[in-house]
Length: 306
Image (cartoon, rainbow, N blue to C red):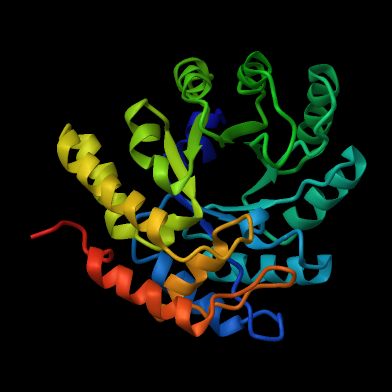
């Protein structure tokens, strides 16, 4: 079966990076997983991206990650593709972890090349070895702020690998993103990233877009997607301006990721609680009130302004 007949085709669209629901003691919030799935599945998302940096994988021990993986598969499996980060710095460790989480029922393994100083030949051997050994498809994660800076030619070469079906292309190098969108293999899905770049990514022809803030304002995100599909770029720009205004003005928790901010919005929406894992910090009550005021001012949860 070709990539276009399977997961690569299914990932075309909006793919939220989902937070990991936690209780105040950092244990998994099992009821929160159920509510998160119910909320997410209300919208026509194309998959979920779980347990990567915004899913707090760097803070959570492996037994908790495996338990969370089971809950994501339990609540989303068979309804949306479940993508889970399995990579570690070492090739052998990544292969073993990928096999272990594949046995739990995930649909694809997210691979971030984590050694920042290795050259293209090293990275190619690393990824090829993982792809050849993996029992499930791979989705590459390219983000130089978190892993290796990959050469565009290498990225394009990897899009032809039969086991690598998609790529999350992070960052703001629009020239590189455009080249990836234009010249990736036809049966490969390039997903751009970032809540502030939905319009830019989809307008340049990306197969889809992925970001954790998508769950904070799915109404606005889908309004952008639909407006681009119908050629109404003025509407798409208006929706993106509202999103970017919200992102610029929302309280900042300084966790490097914005998962704590999104968890706070989702608490306001009645989906999950705002708790995050140490050393990250959760939103305070005062910050929650500020989020609420800004959401009401911008009418963030509405698809279109009247």
